[in-house]
Length: 613
Image (cartoon, rainbow, N blue to C red; front, side, top):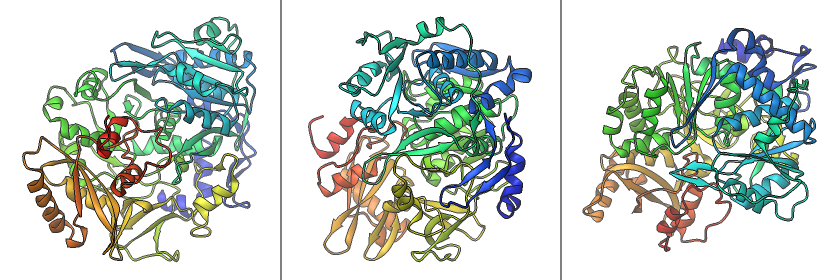
């Protein structure tokens, strides 16, 4: 199948495309005449919400679509019929507020069912959504609303996180102060916290829904009409609005969910991401619902109200497929195995990881402790820009290797090249590239075509460059080395930060590690390691020496850290990614630069810098 998908992509994707419910069939599978902007399934019309909902009513109307649990423990469930009705009503309510096809909608919400409803209602109307993660600041909201020229914002009074209600509407109000471009702010009641109100602009979700008489039908959308914008951090800290269109994105999300997760009719599927990130778009909303799956959604933090919260939810809801981030896995390793032993995880049959390369030690722990040594692990590599999973094992088909994303997915022609764009030998590191267009690929950066071409297509003309380094081994398996700007240059030798981090984490005293470069007069760049120990250290100096020797033994003397800083926690985004860019500033003793709005806990950064938290 993979060989055919690469050698005959139009034949392969034509067949997959025809599995979706079209309002009008497409006439051409791929138009690559205006590269690097692809057009997939041209001539066709469809609607993403109809793919996720309407097509299932006859056979799966009474099947659970969403099982939701709030952080305080409240549970709500929606069948496909109920979710279809809710989305149809909200789409009609938005139209009644003046929302039209093509208008952009900003969504800033907690992880509640209404977030999925809002996303699908926008798709139903044909209004591209821009989901803004619920942890962003007012300034970050304002930047994204202005850049996308959004006319409607959907939010909630508040949402639960770590035992507290976060005041989301308050952030929206601050973001929109003095801004005239938004005519409606729709607010869902969740936190029951007090909110300020702007008459004429603000409206309650439940009141709009009560006023709806007829649900809205799905708007016929051209295959290349924009489905959503999603802002991702750039290397400069200035976010860029990634553009995804309807048909190609849906085809990719649909097929990758089905095959990578070996999706079956009776599965209970839980991706622990937030819909505010692309993982939530593709693998909580669009991919699973396009396949008619039962999806678990959870509002709160993974360790609230206790460290075993995730495993409690897996047992309670009978989760069979579990998809999470390596950072979360390493956090659970540090918390202790006893929190897992208390829960029955026997229904799990497949595990997945997403967001960053997973070190082998965490992979093996995940396999043994969570999967009971019976569950395949799909280590998935992809990014906001690719729309869906690009490299991943297919469970039961490919032999997995701890730390490797293994092989490219259907339709993905991947390679590893050197600085001149020439293929490198297997076993040698280089730049990861994608050689041919694929349906879910980004169609541009909103309002900035030149930045799109410069960022992704200029380094190697004709090849898509995602910004990651990689090695392909003799078996054809890919090992992702992380961002190229996460590659260290020590005395002219290139070292992957992931390689050094894996060596550190393999030491029994280390729970988590992040490695960055720091200036060095002799070597040009030296290694600074930030290490979170498993328990309190009695002798930091002795442990530092021990770890330096350990890394030298694991990789070589070249990889020895010049400095190791012990810390209780690392600066992370709410999705669990370590913000190495901030650590680089700390290591250099420089002022923190760029966007820090995704940072979950600012006190971590303050402690690392020696400030008062």
